[in-house]
Length: 148
Image (cartoon, rainbow, N blue to C red):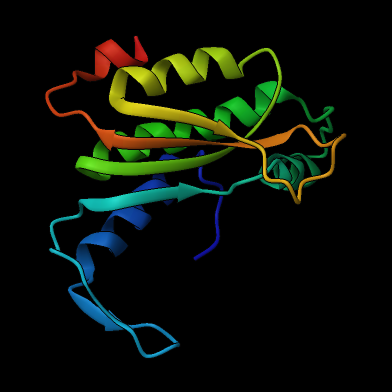
């Protein structure tokens, strides 16, 4: 499936996909089972700014890539995770270090018991790319408490 994850229609398609699976087999032959209720144990967002760049190229309006754009992707992934992760689920999100990442980390801490900020050793020193690893989603957290 390909699409702009910032689009509600694309997110709805992914949710339908999650609800449609009950069991399957990976390429390596390992089996997996989903409860088929649309909730998951973990979510990983490795989305990059390419989403914006392709969208801007198609529209003919080009803007510089920024940490703000990256925070849009992180927030969209977190809102999607809010809807699809079951309590005690985990969330990993690539982000671009900048002015918006502290606010995003604060949102994660409202929703998860433990939040780590990681920059892989294999990442270039000059790269602004890093990851948040959020563990054990809290239950009974209201959306307004996280997203305002």
